[in-house]
Amino acid sequence: MDEATLKDICLTPEKFYETPKDVATDDRWSSDQKQEILQAWKLNEEALLRASNEGMDGGERPHLQLVVDELEKLKAD
Image (cartoon, rainbow, N blue to C red; front, side):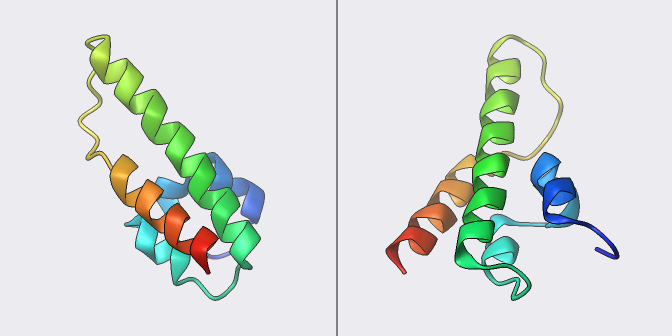
């Protein structure tokens, strides 16, 4: 994650993090920034699900529930 900015990461969080939990444990970001990254990831996951439902399977492993779980944990803190 050399010189990646928050904006870069929000565009495609799945390219910078292996799992949503990795976002939550990244000490570079505030809680609000982590929520922003995870919210962007959630939107990307929902788009993948819509595409899959329309027969356009990209072969990506779904992380939607993991993203939602991490968002809920951050909001609870």
